[in-house]
Structure formats: structure tokens, C-alpha cells
Length: 94
Length: 328
Image (cartoon, rainbow over all chains, first blue to last red; front, side, top):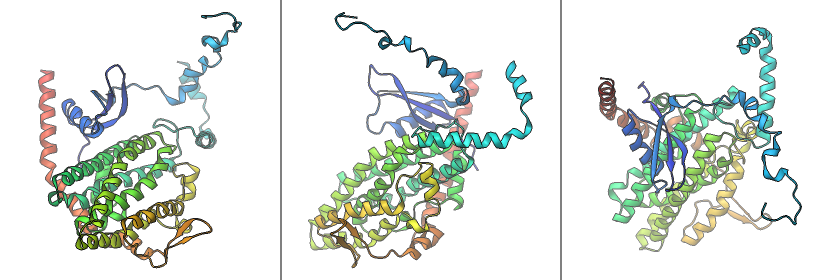
């Protein structure tokens, strides 16, 4: 059985002015080939104007089992949203 | 460092209880239509089911390039040739999206390819039928891709995020496949007597294999109930098959072609078409490797893999050279 080529995550900017978004991954022997494969696999219909490929091993992800401790603390802080504050209707531009 | 302290306090026997709790939470998330992502806890059987289904799906896309690829050099016009190349290229792309989705479950690409080449992995039985005439390319797009779309649209809502996302991308692209196939059939159906006969013959040969693409009937489907609970599957095989028949019969009528089923009839009460009995012995024979082209398809994949070995070696050598230069 062959060894797998390194895995790269693929990000596409669909048009100028928008951010790059993750779309999937490709295997490639080197970064230049990763760009070529990403072009062939993910942009056959003009899906993008720019590509990023990132070695998958370089991505540091948060641990799903820690999602509660990471994200729950924001839950009861509704005062961070503008709708938390009651302002009389007659007050404008606020 | 209090995580360590916590770990040391865990009683060793807590594992099965923890597993049950995880399983209950997992099912609750699935029931609530939450998506499961690669690093989330999932039952081992869910993981294995997905690996099997996604990799079979990926293999089907890859082997699916062969029957149509057979006609690229003999497409009747430059337009048809460009379209067919684009379609076959899409099928390759679909295989890549799906292999990537399967790999998020912890299986390697090379391992999956090895399973295909050794004959251990299954792929869709439909690709073990030959493409004898140009009309077969039309019939494949119309019927085979049509059946695939029917199967795949519900998988866009699959509980496993990477599979669902791959399927959204695939479904967007499949629509062109089906329409170009129908256009080929329409052109032939409106052509000379010989062309009409060719279209009719293709429908005659591809109809039943397409009907069988939905898999065994519900009564005999081993995995359906569990896959439905896990929301990997949304409709049963027979439900999807019925939908396909209902939309396809009027299309055949429009083409002026007859479906090779003497018992086919519209049930006025239900509004659904009823088909005659399916020859499941053929389906199982093809799955077991006794279809007209099983041997040829696997041989073609093995040859492509073997003949590409030097390219993979050269690419690896080039990458090693670049890395060495960068390090120097």
C-alpha cells in the first residue's frame, strides 16, 4: 500500500471583498501541487478568485469536549447585545 | 495542573456508564437535527457505517468514470465531447470530495484505494454494465444520474457534517449531468429511425439496473432502520425508488420511448406508478462480482493505479528535493 501524501485544507475566496472559506481538503506531495489539486477539485465552476492551502497538521483546533467551558460563559451575558436595553420608542437614532 | 488530579480520581469502572451517557447525548443531538462533526464523540458503529457508506459512494464515483470514459474519443460532436469530458471530470471530483469526507472519520486515503483495488470494497452495481452505444451515454445521464440525484438529495441533510457538505456540492453539479443525458436521448428520439432504435435499446438495457440502484426492498434492507435513527438516511429504498419511477415515466413518454415493464401502470387512486417485480437475483449476482463488467472495471482501476506509480514516485522525489533545498 502506498503512503498517503500530506493532507492540505483548502480555503476559497469566492470573490474579492469576501473572506476565504474552508471548502474541503486535498492530498498533495508539495504545496504547489496542493494548489493545483485544489484548483481542479474545488473550482471547476469559477467558485473562486483566490485559494489558500494549509497543511492540515498545522491547524490547531479547539477540543469539542471543552466546547461548554469555552463557549457557555458567553450565554448569560445577553447584555452584550443591543436588544438587551429598553429604550422608549419615541427616542430616535439610538 | 488540576486536570491531572481529576484524571487520577476517575474510578476505572466508570467507562461503560460514561459510554452510555455519551451515546444518549449523541442520539439527542441527532434527534434535535444538530450536525455531528469529525472530532465529536460518536458511537463506533456510526463511524463504521459512515466509513463504509461514504467510501462505497466515493468508489462508485471513481469507477463510474469508466463506462462513460469509454465514449470520450467517439463522442459524435465536439460539443458532446467537451460536455462528456466535463462530466467525467466531475465524477472524479465527486470521488475526491467523498474520500476527503471519509478521511475525517479516521481512515486513510491509501487504505480506501487499496480496499477498492483488492475487491474488498463494494461500489454501485450499475457501473458493471457495459456502454455499448452512444445512446448509453444519454441513458446513463438521464437514468443513472437521475437515480443518483434522488438518492443523494436527502443525504444533503445527513447528520454527519462533512458528508452532508460534500453532498450539497455534488448535488449542485449532478443536475447538469442528468440534463445533458436527457438532451442526448431527446436528440436521438427526434432523429432517424436508427437513432430512435438506439435510444430505445439503451432504455431497455438501463431501466432495470437503474431501478435496482436504490438497493434491496425495505423488507430486505439490513441497515435502513439504524441509518434512519442516526439520520444518515431520510427515506427508505422503496420510497426513493417510487419517487424516481414517478418522475421518470412521464419523461420516457415525452421521449416517445417505452419502458421495458409490461406490468407498469398508473394507479389512479394513489397517483403513483406501479412497477412489475424486480429481478433481485440479477442485483445480487452483479454485487457478488458476476455482472458483465465487474472484472473489466477492477482491472482498469488496477492498471491505472499501477501505471501511475512512477508519477507518484516522481512527485514524492520532487517534494523531497524541494524540502531538502529549503532546509539547506
